[in-house]
Image 1 (tube, one colour):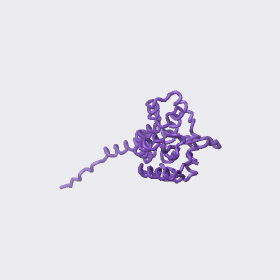
Image 2 (image 1 turned 30 degrees about the horizontal axis):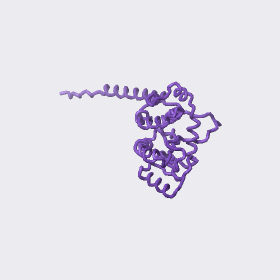
Image 3 (image 1 turned 90 degrees about the vertical axis):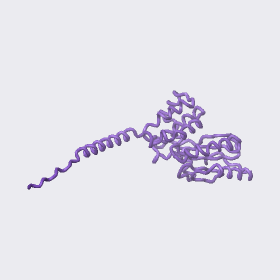
Image 4 (image 1 turned 60 degrees about the horizontal axis):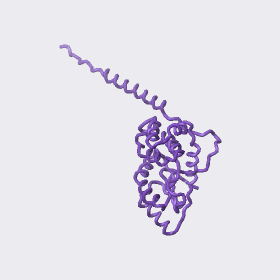
Length: 235
């Protein structure tokens, strides 16, 4: 009796699925590359203005807390949403301290961050920096690099919600008006040894990483008791 050799099962269907996945993946990578935000850079040799930061609180408050932060940094987002309200309510509003935010965008790892800093700077032109600051950090997981290659639509929504003149805001953003200011703030941080975000500077001491509110309050109370007055600038 002749031995019947069973027919080998073919994997044609499986191979077709793999091919489709590979093609789709390649298309997705191409789309991502095409939609990747272009870096915002100044022309070589462009002079930078003096670093200013963005002030919250009374300019003549005896103690200044400085933060160097990246709007796309998760740790900065946690600091802003968790410690930020207590700092504002219990220290800034009480006149004990003022708080200065300095741009420190980590563009090598956060593709959308420079656009976020630009949106905040444009909001500042209309006296709404802190409103945009809070909106950017609250919505960080909607517009960050992992979530979208088009963060602009979220920033425009925030601009509407906080009541900006949209025509002026759009003109500012499209012209990249405040790139030099952002880079000046970052340069000030680099000169102070800032390497990561968030970084706080209190009484000329640099604190990399997030401090809890209790730690900040303890430092402030100690300075107040000693009658120390700190300079309200990053330099």
